[in-house]
Image (cartoon, rainbow, N blue to C red; front, side, top):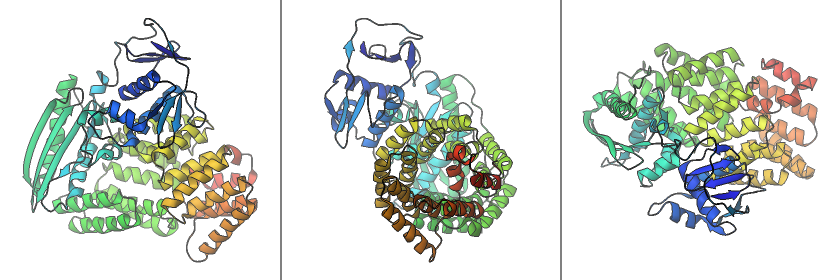
Amino acid sequence: MKEFPPFRLDDEGQCLWRGQERVTVTPKAFSILCYMVERAGRLVTQNELLEALWPDTFVQPEVLKSHILSLRIALGDDARHPTFIETHQRRGYRFIATVQNRLGRESGRGSGAEQTATGADGEASIAVLPFFDMSSSKENEYFGDGLAEEIINALTKISGLKVIARTSAFAFKGQNQDIRRIAEALGVANVLEGSVRKENNRVRVGAQLIAASDGRHIWSGRFDREMTDIFAMQDEISQAIVEALQAKLGRPVQRMASARQPANPAAYQEYLEGRYYMHQVTPAGIARALECYQRAIRLDSSYALPHAGMAERVFYQAIYQAERPREIVPAALASLAHALQLDPNAADAHLARGIFSAFYEYNWKAADDHFAEALELNPECPRVRTARSFWLLLPTGRVDEALAEARHALRLDPLSTVARNRECWVLHCMRRAEALDRARASVQLFPSHPVTCFNASLVFLGWNLYEEAVETIERGMAAVPGSVYLLGVLSLARAGQGRHADAKQIRSELEEQSGRRHVPFLSRAFASEACGDMDGALDLLDRAVDEREPLIVPLLAGRRADLCVNTGYQSLLRKMNLD
């Protein structure tokens, strides 16, 4: 028994206690904690931890960082001013608390015999890895990814089954890691892996469902089909997984309604390829996705999902490429209306319609209805839960529900930048210092991700941490030089540092750019505020509301307490139907 008040570490019983309360940590995080506590006061390098805890297996440092983050959350530790775990950048970690040895074991509200993450409840959990492309041309990676994603989507419709989302499951793509290590990192009891070989009009798929506890094959199957039978094969695979898990769990597993499949398999292939490029979230990827979706619709105009994909693409253009919503969203709404007419059970279409109802129409009742429908169709989809948290619950003041939804999504998608950023923003809007830990952890895990840097820098500014905000913004701008969103936040940070000339220079630069192309009014409002022109900032925020710039919704949610005492800002809330 080791003690570092107020915690007790029972390495024999595999328990961490805070007083009489047992603290939940994953088995791997617990092992990391034990290793560092045994070496308290000494710097433990990243390589040492990786070699000790993942022997004979290559593991990316980000996985270790994720476990360190979960430990910090469990311990309530602050990465900037640590009490327990001290970070040495690019080197490793040091456990800095005083550790005392205690004889014997103590009992609390539970015992070491209690269930862990891999106990009975943990058996109802699965991660689906991307299917390895074994085609001779090696040009069908999108198909293996898409097949895995479709199986994920099918499994999320099973009541009571925890399914790790695509983002986190695909983080291990191409790493050839031991299945048990991947399962441990993702906190699941079962893993599905497979391969796909697509030649001309035939597809061959091999799949294995593996128990993480011992590497045992629960089920395996091989399929050789014409492309015309691809949907039947997907159903056959997912049904086999359901039956195998049902036998293992000893209780029935209920399936839910799914979206309609296309009549033309070629349209399905084009849709999968479009999703593959859309996930890249780059200008080139978004443009390529458009071509794929258009081809899918030409091949099968009654297929709903490419229409929903067209709308999702517009959302990405508005939020990531700063295009004017008033110019591009009407076509997206028409695509969504058509998609839902073709297939009322298309959860992705309801999800996208809920987002547009929120930020573009300020119709919170419609947003609530569409998110509710998407959840009913796909209750364990983290994309639905993060969107509902961020675009509906938070702006309408249901912050406790927003946090619960964000955390539910993060449990299903632990390596997702979106899930992490949105949980962090909800905490920031609640004025909880915990947001700082989340922001720092996200930047540490994804140091060059521009949206993460944008989100984290605003959190740092909210706590007057100007130097940290500037450092974070500069990381983001190294990845996306000239980002107008980051420039706007940088002007606020420079003003906070007292560098008013720099803030004025940024404002001039943004205004000059706005004469040549659209620059979001929100970014220009940041710069006006940084220069002390509050009337100008208010006018630009008003124009952002009129333009339906997506980020105005979470921004005003973050400032709502301040806005309600300012008569000028109250008009913005009224325009958004939030007064």
